[in-house]
Amino acid sequence: MDGVTRIGVSLEPELLKEFDESISKKGYVSRSEAIRDLVRDSLAENQWKNDDEWMVGTVVMVYDHTINSLGDRLTNAQHAHGHMVKTSVHIHLDHDKCMEILICEGKLKDLKAFSDEITSIKGVLRGRLTMTAPSSGNIHHIGHRH
Ligand code: NI
Image (tube, rainbow, N blue to C red; front, top):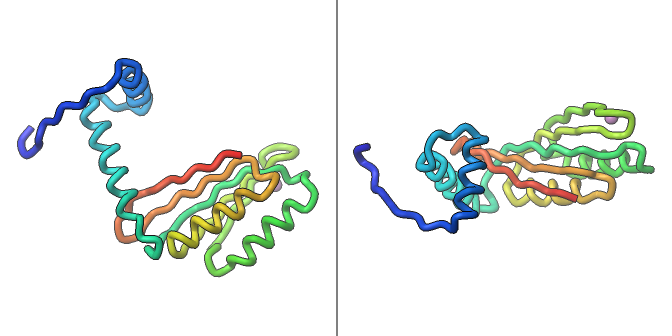
């Protein structure tokens, strides 16, 4: 391949085995391509160290609607950030659980703070913030587990 520099990477056998299994599941046919994507993701993430960058994102939550007043608390949190929440989608998963997807825009730091606030409300089982900078098109995931 022209225009590329070869580098050597030393890894412990267990780490390499885990890496190979992980990239094979994702459909990579070569380690090089997988490592290139990791490097790109990492650089894209650094690019978003600017807390004031304007981002568009989604907050995906799974919660138990049978918990007393949880629905009200989630609605209140959304109203308090009404300028950021552009729209939302609600899906009833089963008897108890709901999934809600909020589509938001705002400064990176504000989206993170809002996502942290709403997904840490007691009764929210899972929450995940995904963001993209309209200027770059890169997608950035921030996971939360409770
Ligand atoms: Ni529901």
